[in-house]
Amino acid sequence: MKTRFFRYILLLLLIMPSFAHAEEKIRAAVAANYIQTMKELVVEFEASTGIKVETTFTSSGNLYSQIINGAPYDIFLSADEDRPSRLYQGGLAEKPFIYATGKVVLWSAKKDFCKTGDWREALRRESVKKIALANPVTAPYGTAAMKAMKDTQSWEALQGKLVIAQDIAQTFQYASSEAVDAGFCALSSTVTDGGRKGCFFMVAQAPPVVQSACVLKGKNKPAASKFALFLISSEAELIKKKYGYR
Image (cartoon, rainbow, N blue to C red; front, side, top):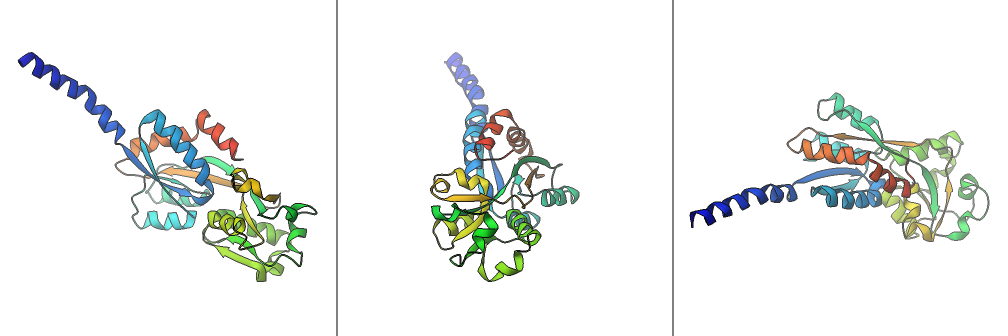
């Protein structure tokens, strides 16, 4: 009986770390442009490590505000370099790193929208009444699109047509539901099932959106650091490339 008891205890000791590892979880604050990419990355990461990833998606500015106000995230994937840098300088995060670079497009659910001209010509058409733009104050893709409009002297002329969305995901939602005629979206949206149904112009005048991440200081730092390393791994690069990131 004693032998059986000790064998049982030994078996428990061997399997307990596996249970603990399987229940390990991190909370990720993720910029809205990265929704589909992140979902695929999480599946790959969870399968290889057993660490669960709970995600929250919205604009980088909104996530930053949540973090400085005490939201319990373990890693922050921003759509800019500035906000992770500020968290690092403020002692709230480890040193940031670049995990992706994205591009701005003008996307429409209407195939005819892209038949002639370029994005500037398309927006000057009489038939175009509403254009979605992610809030330039909180959403880096909206900031980049605004810069393109200003650099091409289009900003003032388009003020009456702009519909401001909370984040870049909502911009695509407005455009795909045809609540607006077109929207300044992330290139990654164009390779989704919904994105392939429409058409888009590259907005070459918009600067590349350099996206930086940082591990936030807290009890889940080791697990969050594992995910940070995964984000720049060769496996992750294949997924990111699929969505137009480099």
